[in-house]
Length: 366
Image 1 (cartoon, helix red, strand yellow):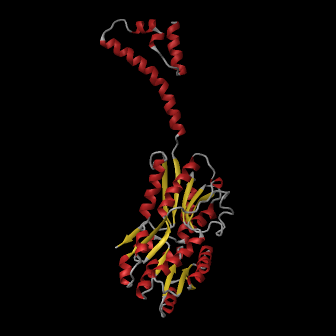
Image 2 (tube, helix red, strand yellow; image 1 turned 180 degrees about the vertical axis):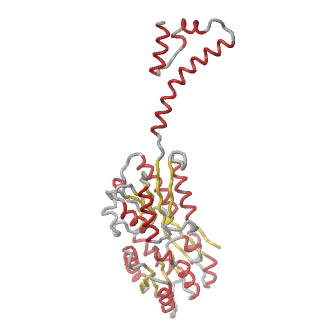
Image 3 (tube, rainbow, N blue to C red; image 1 turned 30 degrees about the vertical axis):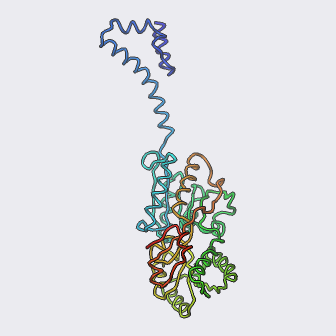
């Protein structure tokens, strides 16, 4: 009886049970050595182990509750870059132990750079009370800031988070925001250098920008500071509507030895196809900030690898899900850039691309 109590106590406490500790009880449970009797003995011992395992499993399941991640994208779902960005984000999360539909649920909304649409989706996502939200682009972050200052937000592809008023300090953002900025403004001067390298005789460059965006103003300033050393005069063209863009580029293209620099912005994205078509129509070499422009028919692009930012964002979200506060995570500048050249467009413009430039390109579209 005492030994039976010892077994039951071992089971109750979920301490390891060793049959050798209780030989009398085992003999009592096994009056003969028939196969059936031995099987019941094993079942008994296994039952004790199972009684210990079940509470542990229940506790583990309780600890591993389903986590929720909201995603507010600043582009449309049918955008060519969209599938790759989301796939990279989910893959990186999986590598960190978070699988959509298993221990995390991911809710995606596509804002398509539409201010009202993004505001509506921001309200919807915040209302779901997610553990964290991934926000792509300045418009997405601005929309979320209108509806929540408590839900953690990790952003990507934001040109100037300080200038936009989202944070006051890159190293210590504070509040509920952190993430990955799109540019350091010194990069903008590289676009003019590329234009001059492609067409050494370039004397004037028009810079298409969004004058309502602090980043557009700062990018133009960086380009202008580089222009004097390259012997190029630069002129801003503010991106508003199709008619204004078409008229401004037509006027600019009347003279020779001219080129375009198209700075990235939500406004530029909305007029992307028109700008590429106008550059082709007026035989203007144009430099862009993203691969997407070159893949759509632009001549050349140099800028951050946007998909890489989604990979890094997964790392910050993992840290937040494990207890870190976004305000303690420094905002990071991009570390991976890509140079993409469209040889088909170069041929249509009658340009022979320099061999050193082609050799250094990350991708050449033929």
